[in-house]
Amino acid sequence: MRLVIPFRNRARNSKCCYSMPRLHYLGTLIVVLISYFGCFVPTTLAQQTDAPKTQFLEYLALAEKGDPKAQFMLGGCFLEGLGVLKDPAEAVKWYRKAAEQNFAPAQHNLGTAFHYGRGVKQDYEEAVKWYRKAAEQNLGEAQNSMGFCYRDGYGVGKNYFEAVKWYRKAAEQGMVEAQASLGLCYASGFGVDKDYAEALKWYLLAAEKNSSGAQQSIASFYAMGLVGPKDDGKAAEWFRRAAEQGEAVAQYNLGVHLKRGLGVGQNHVEAAKWFRKAAEQNYAAAQKSLGNCYQRGEGLDQDIVEAYAWWSLAAATVPQAAADRNSLADQMSPDQILADFKRAKELRILIEQALNLKPWKPQRTVYFLQP
Image (cartoon, rainbow, N blue to C red; front, side, top):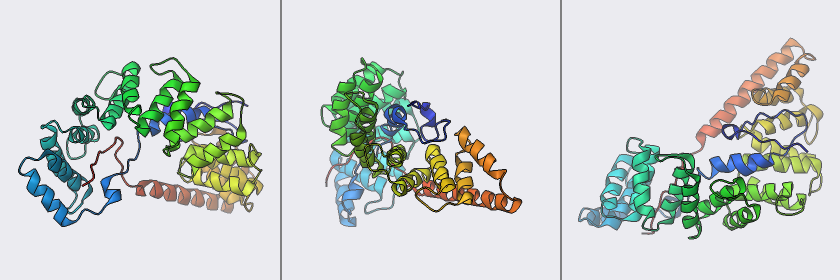
């Protein structure tokens, strides 16, 4: 089976040419994790509690007296809109006050603000300055952010050895994102000798804490036989765990396993369901496969209009989708083709709207303390 290795910037729309679904194992292992572990979603105080107005006022009173923890918590209130209207610039103001008193969580969040330009002008070098101050105080989130910056060259020269050093510090403290990123470094040979067994060790630690990216990579290891004999059953199990968390590549790969009966009972209906979930996240390979399902009537009712529409969406990055769409068009009337164009446009709008509705999430950890 030929493995498809998408380029990094095409993780969601890899240029793959095929008529049957192919498993994107290395795409899962390398490309998705590079983007994913630079873009993780933490659990924040806003997701855990409703800070009342009185809590905000208590923080304000203490913060104005110079209490760094209160200043930090006040910054969080302004950042998340807890007891006060959201105001990222005001959050930065209070984070800075606490950071200048050497309060590590505030230093890290101030770095995050500079990294993504929230409430302050984007400045990667300034972000690294504050990340480093917090990391040197052994704050795991900041150590992880330092690893990210060194890996991708944000505010510092790209240096995989330094990235591994900082990821390891954070990973040894139990930081799930750092554990997964360290697994990626071992799997890819970034700053360390390639070692799949060591990569699996770190991926498993992260996966047990529900890291969907790590779960995808473990699935790839089993599917490719990188740490022992191939095991399609375990691969399907791990792809499912990641797919259920919304990872498009895992959803697509689970669909392939179900379609072919790899390690699971063959089930075209379930395969089409997972292809659709990935396709609706604009994953081109899944759009092509979903079009195939409609064209052949596999797992859902045959519908050449839907087949044409989904192939049209995938056509820009999957050449076979363009070829199949054009071949289908030769068999259709002008009215049918017009209906196809309308449906493809409708699907594109729906997908863009769904993707745009996803709330903004910080791409580095925003650190919170419990009140």
